[in-house]
Image 1 (cartoon, helix red, strand yellow):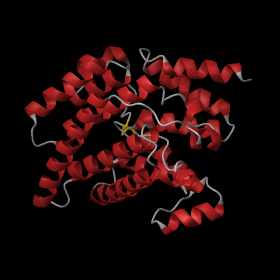
Image 2 (cartoon, rainbow, N blue to C red):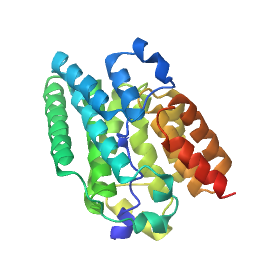
Image 3 (cartoon, rainbow, N blue to C red):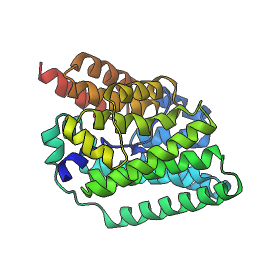
Image 4 (cartoon, helix red, strand yellow):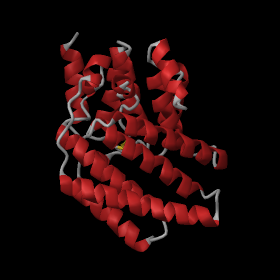
Length: 282
């Protein structure tokens, strides 16, 4: 059972690794504050990104996205430190299932938990006043995705990751019901549908009993929708699509996406490294 649940997550920044629209590093002066913070984060400038997110929380104490973004930055920094963002981590089922339990930084873990709790408290308070608050629903989509990523990719707690995945997908559905143009919310369904749809039929059936269904092509469709029309998560969707193409042995499309990300985020060496790795395998 642990192995089948291990395939639930590729990794969000996170919510994981929350990302930006197609901006270059020289455009930061013209960006809104949160967008600037994400640009810094995605170019691996974690300390300055944290400063931007902290300032936003101080000036917008009722906005759950400030703490959500800070949690995303903390998770992304741990992913970077631990090497989780390298594509070979995900490129086939055996490597992903056999991934080690990593050694997280306890101080970062504490800050991550505090940011998640703060974001969720603000979001639930807003939903108590307005059940159709788009930003609150979207924040809960991301916080659950971030916790699922931490559980799966750092702690290797696969059952916990499945729980957070279900929660994230549910909040995403509510977000899209309120605002169909919130294309970033499609990331949650895209990830879970693709991964579960990639499983063998008997495993898909067992996972479906747990309340999570999968459809590989539907997952790809949702990821493409976020990549093409999303805001914060458009580049992240392209990262996930590149990983999916590697898994499907479509290296030309994977390389094309990675080259675009390399050009948009030149301060991040990961994309050039991944391109070099793909080229060395030809």
